[in-house]
Image (cartoon, rainbow, N blue to C red; front, side, top):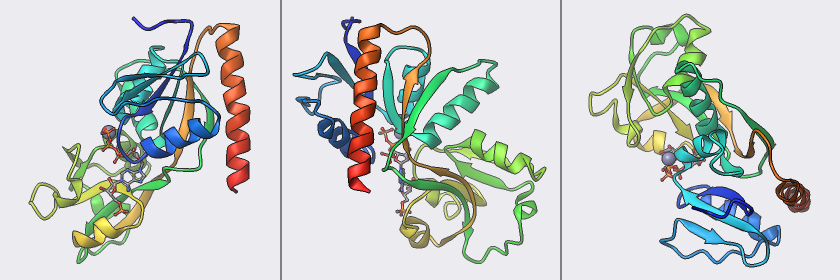
Amino acid sequence: MLDNSRLRIALQKSGRLSDESKRLLAQCGIKINLQEQRLIAFAENMPIDILRVRDDDIPGLVIDGVVDIGIVGENVLEEEVLDRQAEGEDPQFKKLRSLDFGGCRLSIAAPRDFEYTGPECLNDLRIATTYPHLLRRYLAQYNVNFKTCLLNGSVEVAPRAGLADVICDLVSSGATLEANGLKEIEVIYKSKACLIQRQGEISPIKQALIDKIMTRIQGVIQARE
Ligand code: PRT
Ligand code: ZN
């Protein structure tokens, strides 16, 4: 077991948020020796342990109180919250702040020749996505029913492969959609990376450390603006 007196921070191990997450902690003065294959890393100059996991696991680790704080995309966080709520849970956590990286949007995209006049056009279509709950919440506003094709990767090839009519996936530059003959027709959620803390009691020492990190993050982000 990890030492419970040390602050536990969950970061994405490798992916679009990992470099910026590491850089942010480094700029806050936290010295971490990250060895590529290790799940856990220890800060040399502060009582902090870093857990390096898949981004999808971070909201659950915070909500379940396994780690004290975590950095994750709001898209992944919100989907996890909706998923747990659908299971009858009441997931709790504190959002400490949005961060200045990981910006993207979750959008519905259709083959270029699709004639789109509004969300109603999507009624009864099959939509490929990794984010079924965010998609359902959005389309419910328009009373649109749809069938899902759940994919954790390669979502953009689903229409061409005949698996789905349209997709709902993350977009940043739009190049992936373009390369797959798709056009963005509806932005359903705008996301950035954010810092979250577990709910519940925390030792004064750990809380003081979180407060110190928050003050430093504020300074780092302000200096970048
Ligand atoms: O292995 P692990 O599960 O940890 O990582 P992952 O592969 O699930 O996630 P990863 O590293 O791709 O993304 C982590 C987080 O980065 C996401 O949850 C978002 O919060 C954020 N983010 C920001 C993005 C993008 N931009 C992004 N463009 N995540 C994914 N993409 C993908 C998108 O899915 C599509 O395939 O990039 C492609 C589109 O990019 P453009 O530039 O061509 O539009
Ligand atoms: Zn992931």
